[in-house]
Length: 155
Image 1: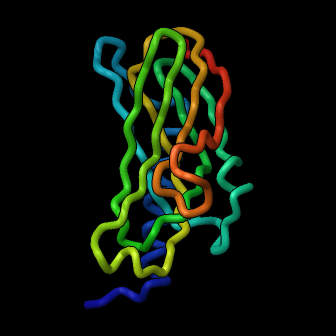
Image 2 (image 1 turned 135 degrees about the vertical axis):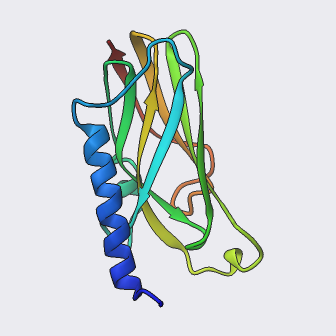
C-alpha cells in the first residue's frame, strides 16, 4: 500500500517532532564516561523555499553533557540525498559538520529538497566551548560555510 506523500510527510514530521521533544526536554540522556555521540534528526522544512538567511537561524545551546543545534535548514541536492554529520572536539572548540551529498546520478538532476534538522552532540565533557556548525553540500551556501558560531557552557 502506498502512502500519499502529504500523509507521509506529516507522519515523518510528527515522529521527528516527538523525538526532538524528548531530546530537547530536561531528559536528555548523557553518559559522562562514554565517547561523544552525534545524532541528527531530519524533518520536512518549515518553508518550502528556504533562503541563505534561513540557514543561519539555527539556535545553539548546551546543558548537562550535551550541545544541541535546533532549527537548522539545508537545501539538499535532491530528496534522496545522503544525509549525515560528523564532529571534532578540541580543548575549547566543537565543530559540527552537517553533510548532504548526492545519492546517485539521478540526484544531481534535481529537484533540490529543503530539509530541516536538529543536531545533538551527547556525552560532552563539562567546559566552555566555541561551537561552529558547518554545512557541506548545502545548495544555499558554499560548502564549508560556517552557518552559526557561538560560545556555550556544558555543565
